Image 1: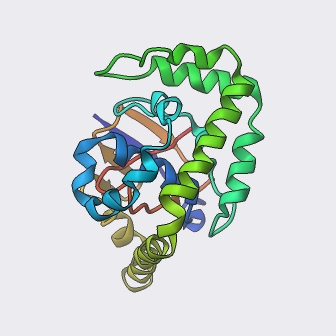
Image 2: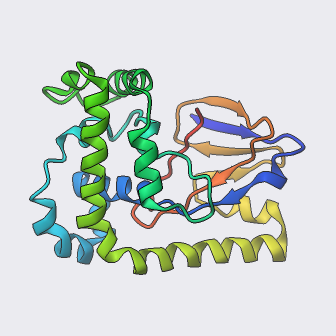
Image 3: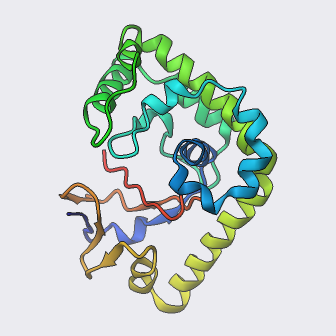
Length: 225
């Protein structure tokens, strides 16, 4: 199974990197919830354990299945090179309720290997309240779990971006795209990501947006909607 992202003539010129605090916060929550991710972040886990125990992560965890679909409104696509968390949270809180309802329903139905957590369907009762609830929780997670460590995390992410852009400058786009991740292959026309639901998507001139993540490694996520 693989996802193919097909490039058109304009897409290489619109391929770019962004750094997203909201994206990093969502991955930090996954690290806390998924033991198989924790070996890479044990010092951080020990440091934030008291704060994490104060948080009721159940609403967010109900929408972030280990295998399945996570609502896109929880980590809006950044529109600047270095996104600001306050701006990202404002965009989350500005999501129309009908979009929240659609994406929450999709998250609860498009998952594999584990049942929907008890009470999760109640998140559909009032989509606007659900949006505000998860936005507030996402802000708390940022403040307690990520923000104190953000300067070091940001430096690591920026170092990765600098390495990728040097590779681009020294060897070209083919080398940079082909070396992104062990599950990624560049075919000359498409970026093929193995281990995802089979699909073929044309970028259609939008380009490719790359968001490196410290907490996301070594997993790989693709947002295509």
